[in-house]
Length: 305
View 1: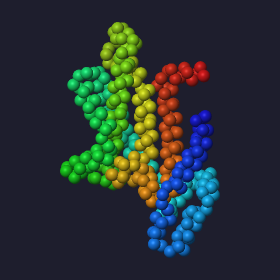
View 2: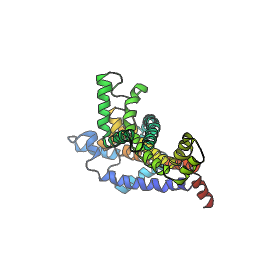
View 3: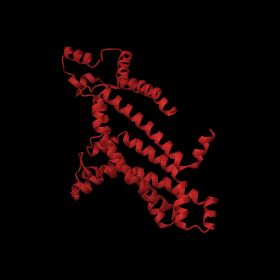
View 4: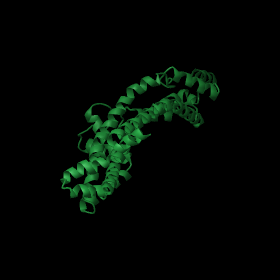
């Protein structure tokens, strides 16, 4: 409840900062709308229509009044409500984000656990090399390679667009690679630290099968940092994977935000930032709740407090 109450001043702080920064951006949205060769009369008319003739303080006050009414304003270029556009595009980003995490989370934990169990062996070295490569390679590079191979060479999947599973597969794989590699690295380090703990040696000394030691004692204790990484990665994906959505023409909130930035469409930029803030707050709350059930120490600390 405290976190939820803090969302209100957080949103006002975010709006104040982002509104000031967007107004400080070079360029004028009016010229983006009508062109630089338009007559002064048309420019002044458009400036009044979008409220750009008012002072920054009055513009901000008007925007806050819209927020209080549950509105995010209208796009300067399309005239559509930003809230309506986001309600259409955000589900597409959710599909892409969850599909990417479904690929990254189980594979990252599995290969990280396997790498830790085979520490120092060839399997560990190969997995470590691949994970470092996955973190190092830019998303746009790996996305273009996947598009070249599966779309242009094999003609197995469409190169771009928004639709069913055939359109979702390539961007989901591309977006999952950095998170998968990160999870492999963190899982490996965490599992190695846990395997050296006295409680694991005690469990083995009691005759518990190795499978039980791995699943009950090692993996369960490794969940906390993994939950954090998965939550943060999912939050960033839900905010819009700008490069991935742009490369594959995926009609999500990341691509929508990028178009707004290019066109200086301030209501679109502000709306995407506010939605992103709410998404991160919600993801953090969910992660805290999962902590409560995954780690008994969190429950004990919360009861004592």
